Length: 243
Image 1: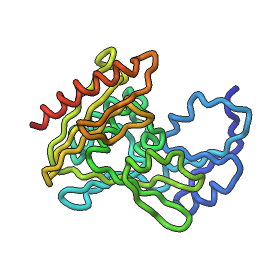
Image 2: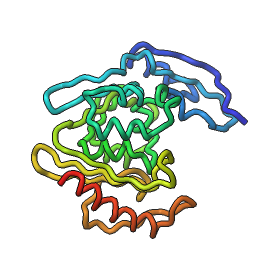
Image 3: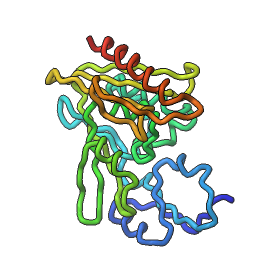
C-alpha cells in the first residue's frame, strides 16, 4: 500500500518550513527520490524544500566550499569548484535520471552505508549545518551520521568541505556501473595529515585509521569476511593514489 499524501507545502524559508513541520505526519523532502517505495496506510504531509533557498555552491575562502542542502547531485558533478573526487563520487551515486533530482541533503540524511559520496565528503572534513527552531548548529559529518535519524524539526541546510590537498578513491563492485560493495577514500590535506574513510563496512560510511580492526556486516553482495579483506586492499590502493 502506498503512503497517502494528505498535504503538500513548498515553504520559501526555513521559518516557514518549521511551521509546516508542526503538522501531523510531516515529512521533509529535497528531491523526493527517497520517498519512492515507502509503504504505509498513515497519511503523510510533505514539506518540499526546493524553493526554501537552500541550493547553490559558494566558495567561502581559498580552501572552503559551502554546498546548499538542496543542491542536486548533478549540480555537484557539473561544478568545477567541487573537488574531482567528490564530483566523481556524486556521479556514481545514482543514475543520471535521478542525479538531476536527488539532493546532497537527501544523500546525507539517508546515510547509505555503501555511499561513495559520503566517504568522499568525510575525508574532505565535511561539516553539516543543521537548522533548529532555536538556531543553526554545525557538526562533523561523522558525528551526524552516528546520530541519525534527526529530530523532527531538524533541517540540514548546507555542507561545508575543505577542498585543499590531494584525494583518491578505490572501490570494488560487481560491475563498473554497479553500486560499490566497499569504498576506500583517502585525502592528504594542506596540513599534511591523512584522512581515511570507508563505506560498506559499517552501518554508515566511517572515518578510520589504517590499523583499525573492522567487523563489517555481510549481506548477499558480500560477506563480512569479503568486505574486510577488500577494505584492506582498497585502502592500499587509495593511499597509493595520493603518494
